[in-house]
Image (cartoon, rainbow, N blue to C red; front, side, top):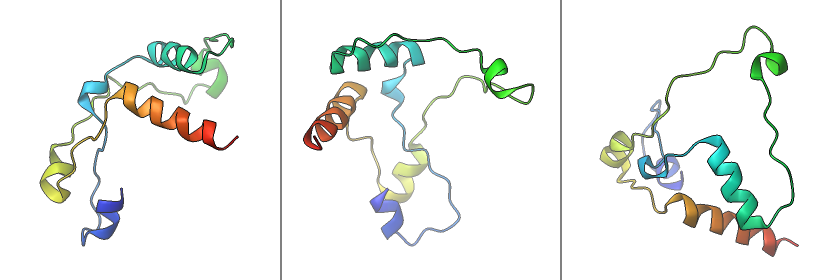
Length: 95
C-alpha cells in the first residue's frame, strides 16, 4: 500500500492479495480459532436472510498480483499463516 501511495500512479486498481493464500471462509475461521485458542463457535449465516434479496455472491475470487508487480514491483510478502501470526502478535501487543 505504501509503495502504491508513494508512486506517481493515479486511477489504477491493484490486487495485492496472494494467490498462494487460497482458502475458504470456514478454513480461515478455523485457523483463527486455533491461533487465538478461542472457544468461540463458528456460526453460519444465510446472507440472503441477513442482507436481503439484493445480496449477490460473487464467483470464485482469486488474487492476481501481476499488475501490481509490473507497476510498483509488489510481490506478496507473506503467506496466510505468517500474516495471521503477525496480526495476532500485533493485537496481543496492544493489551
